[in-house]
Image: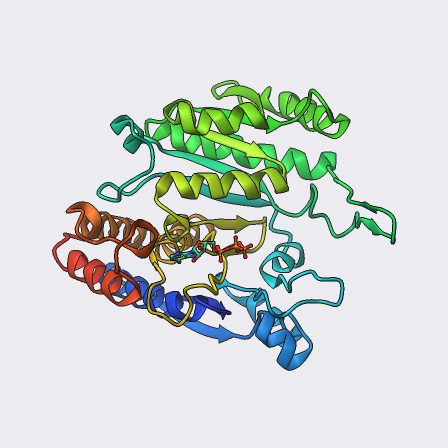
Length: 363
Ligand code: ATP
């Protein structure tokens, strides 16, 4: 019997509406080839939704997403729709708190054939993962900042319980990667030399490392680590860090891969998971047909792997592998050049190239 997965889909705002149909089409093609069915439920959420309904994500849509096997989210937020205090509407962040999605998984692996920014050709081999803590740190809603006419403060919250599960998640990921031939190393990225909160974070990391003796436990200050990402990316395997640092470092990772349109991600909790590209709604290119859907497609591949891990469906891992191979094959010749890299390949061209490449791949 064909396994049928329920996928909640938030296209959101801006280019979200352009990259979502592409991802669905590619995922459907891979699923059909692998004996799977993906049943999508399109849900409301985003800045426009907030303007129209007064809700970032309406309660009924949150409830529906909670019942799905996985959530696929494109991008939300628009610079011209803001709260009175100037903040943008950010349901793509709120959803992490709502579903307790503490581990943001951001792989940094350039696609062969996509021009990357580093001059050293060996950099094409980089393959590491940033784990961005996603519900605490400087983004914790339970530790809001203060604002007066004269000063503003922000609070960074780090708790022992959340850090422990975050580090365990990172060490387990390093174990799985080690089985696939990676180093088996986790680097704790912090600023433990200056902030007590980060010394606390580092101490918890070192304590949890004792439970994973086969994995190397490494540590780096965030400033030095950002240099390492550029100068010695091949030395990295899994890096785990605080929310704000992870936000910044994952954009650096996206730049190393060719641009925001190449950076996939997953926000994972113990019961739910959201898969969304690292990029935002890109209002500067929305509606022009220029958006690169690759990050959204690759986020979909991460979702398929999660479905196998969560629900035990090896066909989903097979479909994920088909998607990745098709994306790699589409870009391999170097002729498919997206707008971040000066080309004109947007959603239509990338979709056609990936589908054509998939045809030629043995399942
Ligand atoms: P957010 O804060 O919501 O993550 P952001 O303000 O960092 O968003 P993005 O919307 O990600 O900004 O856009 C940053 C830059 O990357 C813009 O120049 C945008 O055009 C480009 N960009 C983002 N997504 C894509 C994409 N899918 N394809 C091509 N370029 C993109």
